[in-house]
Length: 400
Image (cartoon, rainbow, N blue to C red; front, side, top):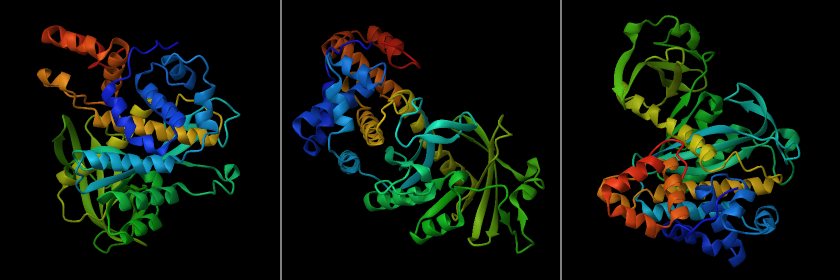
C-alpha cells in the first residue's frame, strides 16, 4: 500500500490547475489527484493512487474514468496550449512510433493479441501509436491513439491502420506546432505514407525494409539487402556523438513510386548486428547532420520507457476501453508537467536541474512524503542536501 502524502507539491498542483476549466469541480479533483498520483505514488493503480490521498473508497475515482463525461481530446488541446505558453517553440521534428501495452485481464474491452517488440511474439494487450515533438530545446508527446484489430472496431471506434493513425496525428501536429521533419521506423514504411508526407511539404526520414528495391545511378534495381552485401568497412564514415561511436553510409537512390531519395545505413560501434536502414528526401545535409537527426528518433523510445516505468502507462489495468483512453490522456499531462517542472529554485545552489522523468517523479515524491518545508531546511546545508538528493532523487530506481 502506498504511504499517505504529507502534501501535494504546490508547483505541480499549480500546473495542473491549467486544466480546471475543462472539468466540473468534482471531476477536476479526481483528475488532479490521479495525475499527481501517477507521479508520486510508488504503485500506479487506481487503488494505490486512491490510498495515497487517504480516500476510504475508490469508487469516485473509478467512476471518473468509467462513466464521467469528459473528452481526452479537449484535455490534449489544452495541454499543447500549456506547453506553448511556457516555451517559444522552434521548427521541430514529428516522431511517430507504436508501443505495446501488455495487459493481463481477458475481460478488457478491445484488448487483443498484438506483436510485442520486447518479447518478439504476440502478447495480450493494446497497440498504442504515439507521436512526439522535439525542437532541440523542448520535447514532449503530441498525441496517442490505439490501433484496434478489425474484430474490435465498431461505429464509435472505426478501423484505421497504424499508418492512417500516424497521418491523423501528423495533421493534428501541423495545425498546432511548427513541424519541418517527419521521422518514423520501418514498421510504418509505405510508399503512400511517404507521398502523403511529401504532399504536406515536409522532409522525412523513415525506416526502410531490406526488401525494398533501389536503383543507383540509373542502374538495374536491386534490393537493399543485396546492396548491403557489396559494402565494406571503407564505405562507412565514422562519427563520435554523445559519447558513442557511430558508422554511417549514404548514397543517392531512386525508388519506384517514390522517386529520388538518399539511402542511409548506420550502426553503433559494438552493435554491428543492429544495422539501421532509412530513406530520406534531405539531399543536401552531410552525414554527420543526418546522423544527429536520426538520433532524435530515440527520444520517443525514451518516452515509451518513462511512461511505462515511471507513470503507470502499462500498470493501470482498467477494463473499459474509454477509461483506458482517459488514463493515457492523464499520463500525457503528467509527463508534460514534469517536463515543465525541471527547473526548481531549491536546486539552483547545486547547479542541478531535473533531467529525466524518473528524477522528476522521485523529486516530487520526496516533497509529497516529507514536505517542502523539510526540504528547505535540508537545503540550508548544501553538503547534506546534495547527499539526500544523490541518494533519493538523482539515482536510478531510488525509493524514498
